[in-house]
Amino acid sequence: MRRHLLWMSAASGTVAAVCILFAAGCGGGDGGWFGEEPAAWGYHVYGGETSLPGEVGYHPENYGFTLLGSSDVTQTFFGTYTYYYIVTGPGSLVKVDTVEDSNGNYLGTWVTGNTLNHDNVGGSPDGDYCTVGGWITGSGSPGGYILIEPPSPATWIKVHVVP
Image (cartoon, rainbow, N blue to C red; front, side, top):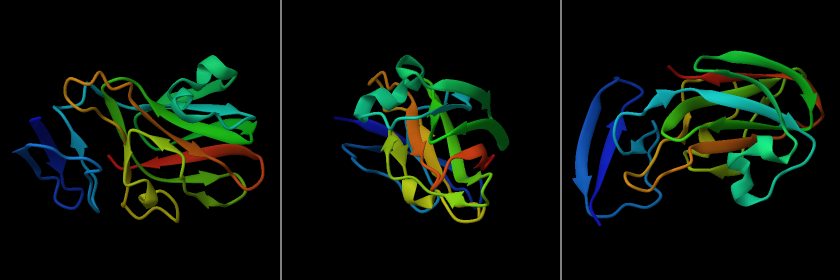
């Protein structure tokens, strides 16, 4: 199966496209995604009290989570919750550097969907990011998500993104 890989270097801002026959788990230290130019850049943040299983993380609004807001830049979202989902819609993506909470913690993630380099989330802002969302051409990708779980309920989270 032929796929097109579009790669953008965070360090130089250079974009390169290559054609490959098959790739799974693709991604490098400075991020990347499959497909064409994204339809949109941006994300939504939801807060709730339960961790959702698997694929339902793409639509936390259908499972009692509250929409706290949307953005395409670094922004603070207010609401006291145990769990926060950062979600992109179909064809959209966001480059998340880290997530900060009202308790002074920088938070990582290990629960993701359609996300590259999730290990880059966490620690103080450093420009290393994960790519949430994007698509594989022709797959009808639903976007992407990461789950953020502060060690204790937070009154706000600040999503740090890389432009």
